Amino acid sequence: MSAKSMGQSVAKGSAILLVANLMVKIIGAMFKIPLQHLIGDEGMGYFNAAYNIYSGLFVVATAGLPVAVSKMVSESMVQGALRETKRIYHTAYAIFLVIGILGSGALFLFADKWAATTKFANSNIAVMAIAPSILFVSIMSVYRGFFQGMSNMIPTAISEVVEASGKLIIGYVLAYLLLNRGLHIAASGAVLGVTAGSLMSLIILAVIHAKKKKSIYENIDDTAQPAPVGTILKKLLMIAIPVTISASVFTLTNMIDTVLIGRNLDSIKHLISESPVVLYGRYTSKAVVLYNMPPTLVMSLCLALVPAIARAFVVKDTKTVRVTTTQSLKAAYVFALPCAVGLGTLASPILKILFKTDDAALLLQLIAPAVVFVSMVLVTNSILQATGNVLVPVANIFVGGIAKVVINYVLVSNPAININGAPIGTTVCYFIYMFLNLIYIKKITKADIGINFWIKPLLAAVVMGTVAYFVYGVLNGVLGDSFMFTLVNFVIAGGCSGIAYLLTLLTFGGVSREDILSFPKGEKIAEILAKIKLLRG
Image (cartoon, rainbow, N blue to C red; front, side, top):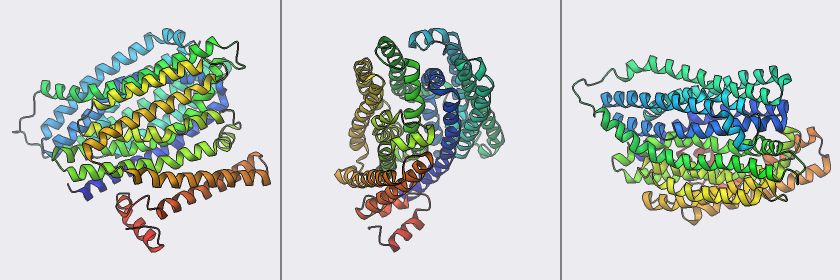
């Protein structure tokens, strides 16, 4: 496959998942923002205490094997080894089934101990409610990895939308119905919606697989001998274990982080004006929710990237690896920068519009730079995994994770800083992680990530932030800060700053014609930009 066709394949897969993830983000906002209004910071504290422990076990259970399945299926398909593809699927399914059962059982049985450890009392019921999701998501990951390995992103996209929709409808309805039973019970109802959504998604994927498997294997060569199950299992684990360790190190730091935040806030609760669970809920349900949105969309690129670069790497197509790596890194950087600047510069109006209060403005400003670092980490991890360098992120996240834990331990226990220490730790952690990953990426792929790669988009982002700050400030001073005028001021300031970013980026040559051509409908976009003299080269 040529560099151009590879780029088109990545772009098509990314576009499909991008649309799906946009829908998921919209649905997620329709769930979490009204939910926050319904159960408040305290209720969201219980919700996120449960969700974070679930996320921890979820990553441990499913981080590595989907990547391994995707990579191995991609390699076997390009070699025409359909019997081996089939055996990879069945082997992975058996592994995931066992992992899912063990994960769900552990989460359910030790729910009380988790609540006691974090000092967030009454979160145990919510933890029990989300426990079955580990089993459902584990099996779901087999299907997603299988289809992604064939560069078919549609089943993943459909399942993600179904999962988010189920969470929205069932979770919010249950929270509303259980509200009079207490905030911790209402939060548990919302968490149960996550479980229901994952079950619905699993059913959809199973149906799609059942319908497609006949056509997938119709040209199977019965005489070709697949690798033994033991060999496949060994290869799956050789790829999956380092990836899982990498993800688990960060997940472990997040879990320790949650414990440290809870315990450190509890230790100074007599010196601060609000309860620990309220502060934790404010941070996780407002600042973290908004900061998580852009990197989640970058995952669309990552899921398409692994099989694409893996194929090029197997056939030793170094040019395709280098070009695809450079374009993917630039796409993530150019997308994440304005998101980070927008969240930081316009934190107060964003929070007022969504939550009718800007009490988390400083938290959002402190964590906004991490949007860039996280986005780059996601892409660099995918590239390292696709090129077989699965151990590199393990060491790098370990370094970043230690920095995060230490910073949070020191800052959160300081009454003058308290919860504001958490986003600082996250930002520093991801910067270190990104920096170390990029050193290896440059060495392995020879990607073109010199000074111009960083400076030109950064200059455009500075112009954007300046425009956003002054336009919003002027409008706010003239029109006032009522809800309606806050919304109007934000839309105008956001629109002006977004246009300023694009114009400055194109004028400075921050993106090239080749970069544009790698996007969906890139030829048409390049043609339009060339006509209005905004595209160089």
